[in-house]
Length: 171
Image (cartoon, rainbow, N blue to C red):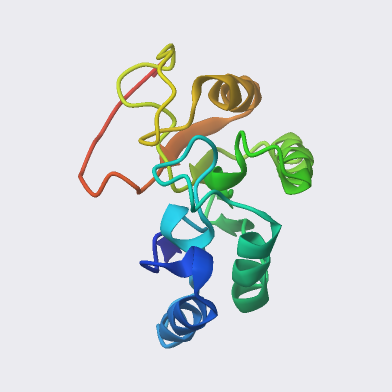
């Protein structure tokens, strides 16, 4: 099971909410892999709410409860990777750490890859130039897409928008 974030309402500022979310996921039978969303660790700048931007303390809260903010596992012939989208464009040192981890993971597999993250890469087109809280912003998106295009990534799944969307790009 993959959970693409927003397990909490006020997780960025509540140890109790993040702990409750971890406890609740622990009750599920299948292996559960989760990445945080903006309601769990805060948003990357500029964010939806200026007073809930991701920072070291908010990320620590998640890591204390969940142990990690990214994951990798094999499922049949697929490699499944999950990243913390809230780090993209944050400027936190953990963003560089995640980039290096993702490069290593993508470079170490010839299997087709599914990438899971909280925010969608874009709404309609990877060329969108608007800075927004609804998808990954242009500059970090360009860096991520560069990585993904060099690897056998075949699908990207996300949450955040609370609706169903199915977009096919470049096959």
